[in-house]
Length: 100
Image: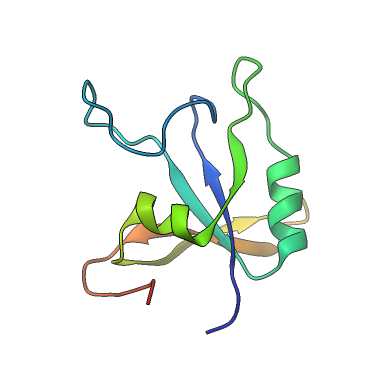
């Protein structure tokens, strides 16, 4: 398996926990996966912010696994400003083991 680069996205801002809290069943984080570090970094840098808060950040493989669980797959594409596919969103798939 080739090396992958991960980013987290939270529409409410990156100051929220990656995991469920006692008062919420909602995990607002999504995980994006990229084949190149430069594509990942560019995507994170192009963050539109939410009320002044960043909504994207670089995360580790370990954090991506904790957010998504073991059973997921690469799903919808992420494109850059030139409409070139630079990455994919991870989505839950109980029939697939993404993280070894």
